[in-house]
Image: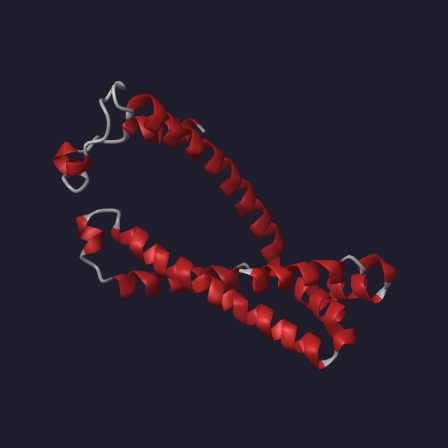
Length: 171
């Protein structure tokens, strides 16, 4: 865990010099974040190119667990979804984010900023909903009398979740 954090911190320290050299804003305006990183690391010669290669490969390595998790999440939606092999769900997730990446490549920064803002708001409301469910309704002696651990895969015994959906929509 130390190596990736150190790597990103070194890049951050290198990017702090942005205003001291007019080549940096020029490279950003002509080629975006990638060109800025390349310009920032260019004084390091071959080692700078090696760091850029590591950064590019780390994008792939960081996507692998998320893509596999998308397959698991799709199968968790219910028995009809679980019947489809996880490899197909993973392939579908890969295809979806590849198409989205190709289509949105020219506006990546704007899309990412908007997506992260939506994700931040959604996460805040989701945490409140889950905390209320756990500490108010599902606690021992609470309104619902705790968790029924035997009902996790019995659709007939599970609640519909309308209150949670309504709370999420309100958020």
